[in-house]
Image (spheres, one colour):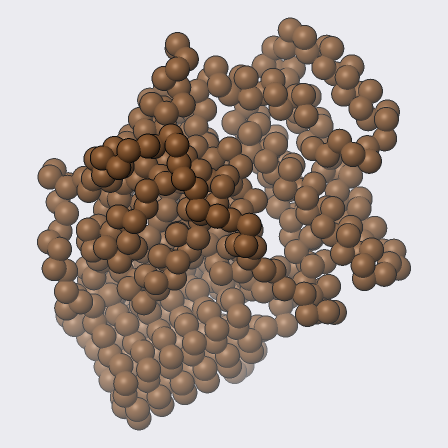
Length: 331
Length: 186
């Protein structure tokens, strides 16, 4: 934690604490750490509040933001070091307070970014290659860089992409794939324009890339659905996770444990809405259950992490505008 | 801060290993951590920020830091570098489209001073997917042979089934332990 600019009383308080701890039991150390983390956190929370309530200049706000961010980082580190010593309840409590402070900070930053085109930059200029003294000789490195293989069923090196079901570079096509074609397949649909695709069965994973003006209706997917650079499309998917990147003007009907968007605008979301004769079986096959809950509404926008405020980049499709899809959709 | 020094002493006497899990988004970092810690892996949402788990393993206390891999979070990775004993780099073996991104991010990470000396294990995850690249293929694509600054190992695994997670963690723990704890009795 920062030593500079702290009121003297605080330091004194610490000194007293240190004396008390000349023969520390783990418990006392832990409770003091918890207390000091809480105190620091309260300070940060207060300054984050000030950040929005006070009428400050841009520079001043940025300084405060940086300061808060530095303190928060230090705190996260302290917390991380201490985490395992903390009672589960305290751990959870502090972690949730820490993440909510991070969120608030990110919120302030994104507001500031909107004001002045602020961007996070990767600072690689400082990093330089290390000549490591510890590892030393080359043989040592090579010896350790082994591939564990004998008893581990490293599947053959020549794993062709034949197991991947690829469909790309098409326009104005209508396609339907059945469960036999899809079973245990990793599906990649890319560079398609004005196509309509019905995946009537369970697949392992689904990647959608560079699609424009397409409709993709899918049965349950065992793992994740990954969408990149699509626009003017309608997707309907059920899976573990949905991630949407660099896409625009999408309508997504989904069911998942979590759906996020990043660098994406003008998205609309609705609940998964597909039926076909053996879909229940496919849900089982994919290890998913059909959900009637509201989780589909919980979409997170990584470019707009603001507590309790919806992102401007997506919205919910009004109930009377939601579509339903079934096996007759393409006929 | 004085309290932390005391905690650090405790940490040494309790043989703690700090492990950082990184990799592109959708690689399976959280699933690997949850599976290894014996938690439910059926409901895992994309990580918004970070998760921490601690557990005892082979007489060591492992603290896992699982940090989100979304592009917008990667610039924050560096906040977690300090005191890292081991880096777990997770790769989605079936995501061939982004292997170049994966390589670039990994090699950039290894230039970090604060990561110097950290043990590196690469989990070639999602081997349960039929189009997954093999570990040796990935070693090739990621140009692992060029890494001379870290002690490393690549291992194929599946976070879904748990295959090879234990083996990987054993190697990692032993490697860190031999580096950090050998000089002390205990």
